[in-house]
Length: 223
Ligand code: PGA
Image 1 (tube, rainbow, N blue to C red):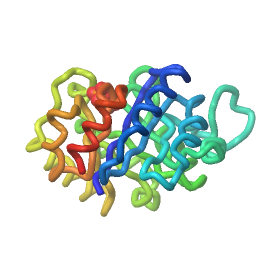
Image 2: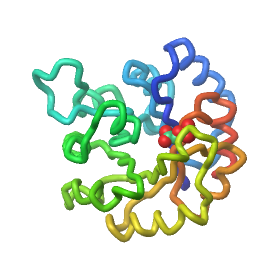
Image 3: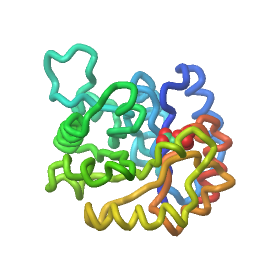
């Protein structure tokens, strides 16, 4: 089954999330795996709404603490995320690397924490730094991760990278990391998503996942 990760980023109030869920649940879900990544406080509500594990929908956090539980004010530990139903976590998104100055070592620590708590990290990587980004992750954890190839210039720009250019990068990531799930992210929408069906295992979608109707349209195209 192909995968869609719906990354809501820093969008949606609780009321807007409820509305999205209500609209989403009015339709039968096509045969795709959907992983919704809402802001932290909305995770329990989404977990409850989708009855984790029974509906083909899983929940991801958008970040995780690089530390275990403890005296780290403001950080959300992997164990806490698991306790409210998140089974995946996006790690090392370029927006985290850019605006929050996350280093490869931070990303590696987050991967370590996530895996220790039983979560699947969805690690975002980009081309110029691909080798060093992968090398930073402890080798024995690579097989526990999913990866998302996200060319910086494609994110939020409307300029999705053509699948023909994405395909060799996906192969390269699989060569570096082994038999792992590799997604593509960057301006994917219902009109272009089919392009990525053969080149990837799925897509990570930001803007086009914010409307339930668009997310459903994406899912239909991927099924
Ligand atoms: P976008 O975001 O779909 O809005 O380009 C993709 C991403 O989160 O990387």
